[in-house]
Image (cartoon, rainbow, N blue to C red; front, side, top):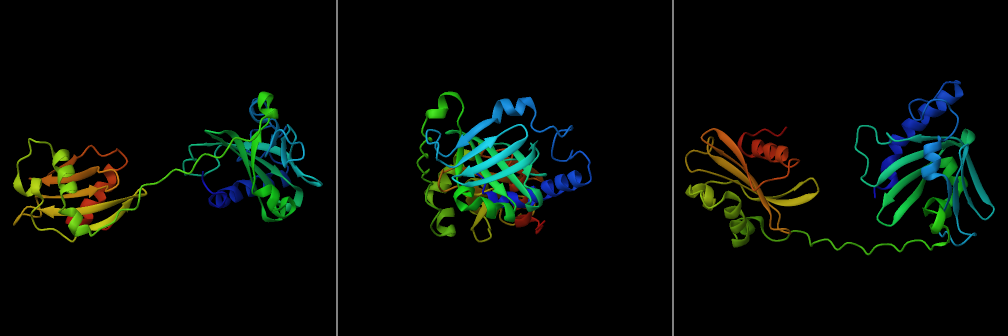
Length: 287
């Protein structure tokens, strides 16, 4: 799940627009539905009611989603946000996280905004708090750091779901790039990517002139980059290969006789990155 710190910049712009519109007596269309009548019936049907860190414990930190207000409370501590509204376009031009549902945003007077960020993950529907600094001070770390689960129906008496076990990530790539580039594992993967019909020696065996192999990170995955070319004809006959040591997958781009083709069936999102890396290696284009 995306860290709340990464949401601050986008939320500040949305909240500022909403508060400015409220002060001017105008509908805050940038972050809410028109009408200003609190949460609409469809939002109440999905998100209304009690949310808690432990639904079976009435003394546990709790949130309440009501049509006309959002409430966060624990013991004698209670913070109320008025004029709640929904915000689906919460991340500006960036796509939202896959498990983000929407933001329920409210105003705590002059102190600023209190927002309930609703997520849907494999454990169920949950809310995490975000707030302007003065409001966060009123809430305190006990309320701010928690996850709140929806306490509707049968879930009301249920205990909070257990946290999933941490996913074990593969070890980071290791070894000398030059040695790995010439090693049997990468050679086998490259041969499979090319297909058995390919017989051009410089391309199959990657034996031609080549820059020093190096580690590169593309879209969060670390690859071994090996660029190489046909002897005495590097400008028109060359290639790059990206090898993922963890999975054994390899992707590449080949230029031959002034025509290019992708090898290894790279994902659609990776194709432009292969084009960029190829231009950097063989055309000196760093853009």
